[in-house]
Length: 275
Image (tube, rainbow, N blue to C red; front, side, top):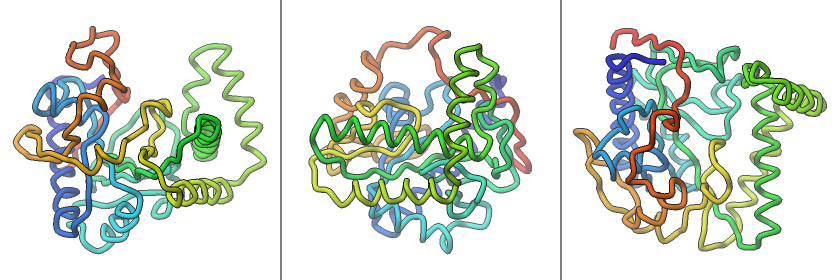
C-alpha cells in the first residue's frame, strides 16, 4: 500500500498524463469523457478520490480508433500509448497512456512482462443493441475472452493464493485457455468489438474488465451531453447527467465508504523516475 506522499505524487503524474490525453482529443475533435472513479471524484471531491490511484476516460469506438492512431505521432516524447497492438505482452482490450521512464508494480500483474509505466486508462465505448438474452451472451463472451487474455500473459497468478476455490477456478480456466492462442483470442475480441459497434442502439458498453455489464452501460444521451468539471487544477468533460450514471455504479455515491470498502489497485511499488 502506498504512503500518502507517494499516492499524492502518483496522482500528480496521472494528472499530467490526463492533460496530454485532453490535448490530443481537443486538438483533433475527439469526444472523450471521465468515467468510473474519475467521474465520481470530479463530482464528490472536485478531483481525485483521496485514496484513488488511477484515472479513467471513455472514448466512443470510432473516435477511439482515431485516438490510438494519433497517439503514434502526436504524443509528446515523455508519453507512450500502450495496447495489445503496441505491446505483445499486454492483455487488455483497452489502452493506456503511460509516462515513460516510470514503473508501477501491481499485485494482479506482478508476474507479467508488459511495460508498467505510470498510466491513465482509456476505454473504448461500443454500441450495445437491446435484448436481455443478447446482452447476457455478450457479458459471458467478454468475461471469457478477458480472462483468457489475462492468463495467456501471466496476469492474475496471485489469485491462486487467495484460497482453494480460487486456485481451482484459476487452474481450470488455465486449462481451458491452453487451447486458444493469444493472437486467436485477440482476434475474436476485436471481432466482438467491431460487431457490437456495427449495431444501432441508444446504449453503449464501456470495454473495461472491472465491472458488471449493468455498470458498464453508457447511454448515448449521456455521452452526447457533456459538461466541464473541475478536477484538481484542470478541467475535464464528463456526463452532464452524472447522477444516473454514478448511481448505477456506486449506489449512494455521495456517501464516503468506510476504509475496508475503499478499493484500489493494490500497488506494491512505484518508480517515479525523474518525476
